[in-house]
Length: 373
Image 1: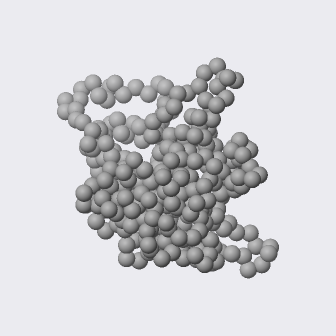
Image 2: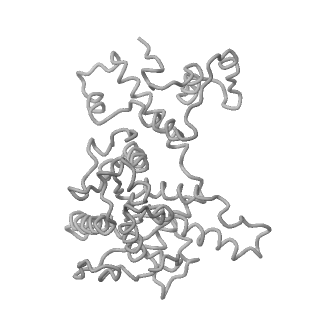
Image 3: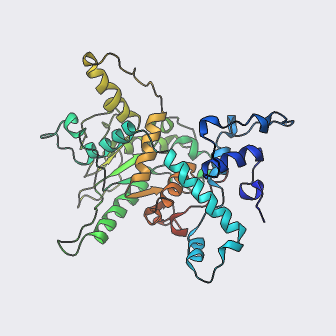
């Protein structure tokens, strides 16, 4: 029996249009995409409706991520000789959806210039030696390995949101978790012989919304200011006063935190934390191309792309990272975990928690579908 569209994807989508689109992406349609014509599907529509926009703009994406997909238990069933999957319509639907999601993920890869810009940010911060290297020399290297991406969801809007009730909100605590995690991780994977090849973690890229951190709320103003100071102290991308620096600033790669009296571990050097968001795009892209505008007929004005390019770069680097540490009930973390899982990186998906520190994401790294709190 054939599954209906509502069984495969339970939402109020016009079934004929959805089915035609699905057939095209699954390769079951011989029509070229430029010749797709949905007019016959919609010309007699009597009950049009508004979906996936305005205050509900995230609904469409969440429904897409909520499509039934192959999970580790399903894969084990498929590999079993005793399992007759051709009689299981639910499993067939999951296989179809998983293939569709793989196609969409391939389509969502950023354009090459933005991939390069993101990878250059990693190399610039992890391999920078101010006495020997310049920004321009670092720009030639595109390889990006040996790093963690931390999604620190400490913006004020999440602090006051019901989704953030169980989240750890103190950035000092979160950074301490990451420092401990990296130390244990590197000690565990360090080769026992000189011939072994492993990737040691060399630093942490922090994905965080700086503007959102400064929208102080009276209930969390003291903690928000504390987090802001801690971020500026630990991030080598910024001066302690919060201004961006293109030359990685080693002001807080080790030693004590100057803005609070918390006792810090000083017996070992802490690996750098850095950012590849708005500050990096402004200085490494906009200002660099304006710097050489005499050799160019035209150049893109500052902030031409708004926040979309920094967001794309952060997401790309999070997906490509050796390890990703996010937080449950964050839609952004859920999107990254899910993408990484279907790229075979589920074992390197982790979450920070208020009670248990940093722990693996269960179910092989595949998080539960994000739901409204």
